[in-house]
Image (cartoon, rainbow over all chains, first blue to last red; front, side, top):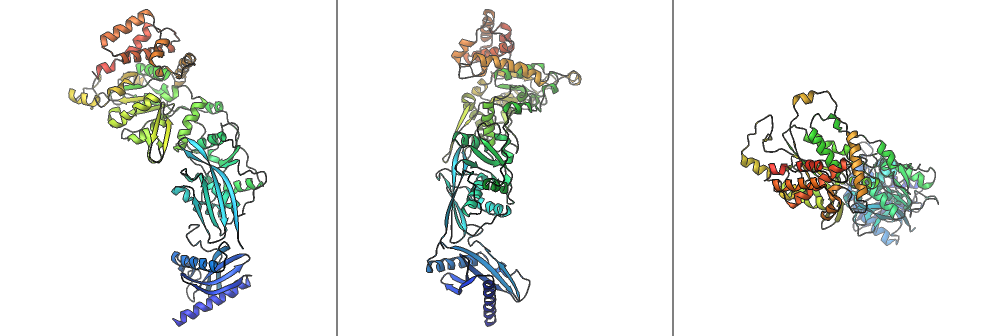
Amino acid sequence: MKQTYETGLFGEDTAAAYLCEKGMVLLAHRYRAKPGEIDLIMKDGDTVVFVEVKTRLTGEAGWGLSAVKTAKQRRIARAATVWMMQNHCMNALIRFDLVEVHGSEILHIPNAFQPYGNFQH
Amino acid sequence: MDYALMAKALSMGVAGVNGFPVHVEVFATGGIPGMEIIGLPDASVRESRDRVSAAVINSGRQMLPRRITVNLAPADMKKEGPSFDLPIAVGVLTGMRELLPSPDYDPEDTVLFGELSLDGQVRPINGALPMVISARECGYKSVILPADNAREVACIEGMRILPASTLAQVIRHIEGTEEIVPQQQLSYGDLCQERIITADMSRIRGQQAARRALEVAAAGGHNMLMIGVPGSGKTMLARCLPGILPPMTLEESLETTRIHSISGRLAPGSGLMVIRPFSAPHHSTSVISLIGGGPNAKPGEVSLAHNGVLFLDELPEFSRSALEALRQPLEDGVVSISRIRRQAQYQSSFMLVAAMNPCPCGYFGSSTRVCRCTPNEIRKYLDRISGPLLDRIDLQIEVDAVPVKEINASVLCESSAQVALRVAAARKIQQERYRKEPFFCNAQLSNDALRRYCTMSPDAEALLSAAVEAMHLSMRAYSRILKTARTVADLDHAEIIASAHVAEAVQYRELDQKYWR
């Protein structure tokens, strides 16, 4: 278990560094709210980006992303809503990104999902 | 950080055979991304968000993560079908500022409709004609529609019709970078030139009496019943009718094409209908499919046959309720369909042509084979057709099998074109005569109009009263004979009905004496 936790932490740090290098600003790391948690909250221009990071040490790149299913997406979205309420920016432009850290390889998918299905509430 | 934008597009919905304007309002804000469509959409309209987002991406634009609300106003009318895809896509693109309309584009005056495919093509939709007609009535000036629907509406004057085949093309048009070339106006007369008649009367061998009866029926718009042994050519005769009926006027064609358009019976890329419709439902048809109905009050076969022919083959095999339901449209030329959610009126003025065998085995009264039915069986079979329905059929003829030597005869019979000329002449006389009346052909003569327009020579009158006496005919049968005699006289270009005309008309009435007594 300890091993998994550290793997996750390593991945998130790598991802944060990668995104900052791309010009984003880190707002929060491991944000926890009652309905769920968000790995990274970044700011890309005037858009708030909620990032879910998946770290894989084995297998092929890309499969980690498929682990983010509908239920997980909803948890992230609910947590994002709580964060927006706390920060008084309910109508901000927001986006949900996925990052897979696979050794030295990093896969970044901007606007990876619409939390309630494809453009559905 | 806050973000909120509005955009609008104009479209059309369909209720019954009429269109109504639908305002597509799009509101794009920040917040959790997604798209919601409100304003009483049905399932196919709600699915449109998936088609729209795919089509937008495949047209080289981005689907930005925005919280989008699409409202289809007025919100109390039901919206059906995929035709809102195009206006929703344009509204959403404008709302996201992915599309910046040029100042020449007026979103309040350009009607948009069309279905989108995932790759961004604009696909044809049902009901284009009623939508464009209503758009013109509402005073809108231009319409962007699927290229495959352009010919259907090309006859409508006073509208700028812009056929689009891809969403990208529509985007470029609205941005003003590349205008869509407007559809050229087609005149209805030009369309009529292209009419092709598939069933020609020259292919019918023999059957002189039946051919004549068909001509009389076409000339006066009379309903007709053919009784005959199997394989005697009843169906073939009936199929020739649209070819000898006079061509539809523009108004008639608009009425008929409208109904076919909302029912999705028009082939993509076809124009206004120039040949009268020929509708031949199978005898297993239900009342609803015949008359119209269902939760959305869709038109039935009687309305699809509007201004044309409704052909019922094997008449006694139709369910009793289906046949009885025909009585009202036969009388009024219109059906009112009322459902809890929807009311609609569809025109249904058609010529009823029916065919049947004389008995269950089919050979009663045949000159070639022996019938093996009992009198009781025959009676039961014929009784499936009620008196009131039979009363509404002016012409009844017997069609017997054609002798072999006539089949092999190489003489070509008269073609449909030749017969059509005589029919058209007779119709013209009627139109001229009834120009001040609410009807236009002999079959629609009312009783008092009958007295005014059907003057008989003295010997014709004597013949008719003798026939009525000898055949024990009712008053209704009398007026039916008179109407038919009027048509026969019109084919003869005679103003006064002579005894020969009456004699022929009486002949078309003899069968109910022979079979139904």
